[in-house]
Length: 359
Image: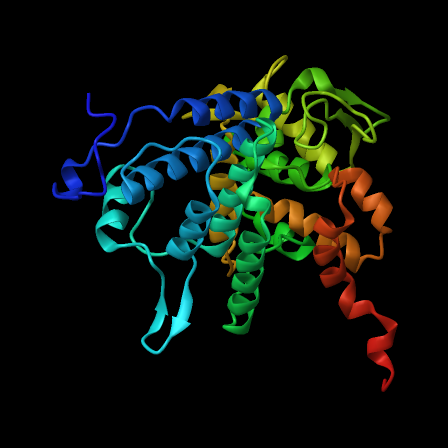
């Protein structure tokens, strides 16, 4: 077992590179604490992946395993290794190509080349959280690190770089996607899934995959209330400052009823895999994104679609139709106005009376 192999030597080829199978002890402790703190599985995975990357990079860069606290020099080196800057030759960073190859070969990076700035910011935030949880001196809060990140954001904006966002599925896109859904089991499921995800407040893919019949109750002739017992916001069922009951009405309720009746589901997950003509186990959250992308492609829509498109599209459409922001946030479970206002304003922009002064 070559857990303490000095990667800084890099004499071996990248293909033969062996990274430690476990993080340094303090980093591993931080992962366990983060597992307890984070209710969302996706958050847990992203935090653990970020700390694994830090550990692999630190070993490759300095030849020693990562321990906490990380010193200021290492934190700054992490930034200059991963953040692009412009010089006379173009965009560059300081990560040596052999180390880049080593990280890819070890499965810590998906491909060669610089990370997105948003990824670097997330990994610095995770390292900062690890220090806070262990009550250690936090290099990520130092003025030198914060200033460097701030300048990097400003430089990226000046270069014309923008955060990538999934294309919003507003009503027109949703109607086109629903038109591709036939009366087969798959068609009925996909129609119900799209309607549920959109109409119940732009649910996250993990929330759609976790939707359970026990939380669904009929109201009136054609309507449902879905009780969102578990969400990223509610943190394992805690509903403080939350509105867990989400109405599903009209056409969306009809689509949901048609799927439940055709599938024969009586308990458990609402949205299931389909094997030929047989209903299988619950969908995985990744399958929700796949369904959204597939229906967008079948509808001939242009854009970068994913599961988050339903969420951003719900907020955007609400802005278009003049729904109040508090009402929207009660449906989406957003707790931060800042995180939802961009989509909301984009939807409402075309109806801004101040834009029609020359009409």
